Image (cartoon, rainbow, N blue to C red; front, side):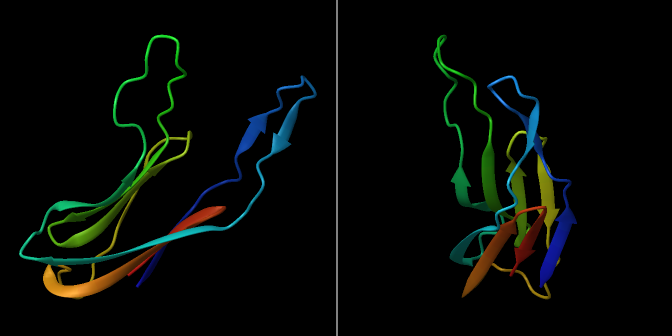
Length: 114
């Protein structure tokens, strides 16, 4: 099952004062295989900040999280432009004890395949 959300190309300011540069549109992919029996809620993968930064440290809030919510996959992703949430209504719950592979692709859009 493939679900996608269109995202406009990000534009970041150049640090050398010459204006703006388009963010390169490189396709990124990550996947996770998960097996769960009877656990309808839980985190499969998380990458992002865990503790608050020290006073002198830069606050970085970018993260990616794949969770099971009522046995269905839920993706939360934020790389600086706000949190995007994708949910997939699979034919059956993923807490059936079988192995399931979840693929996430992002470039100008975000896709979640189960």
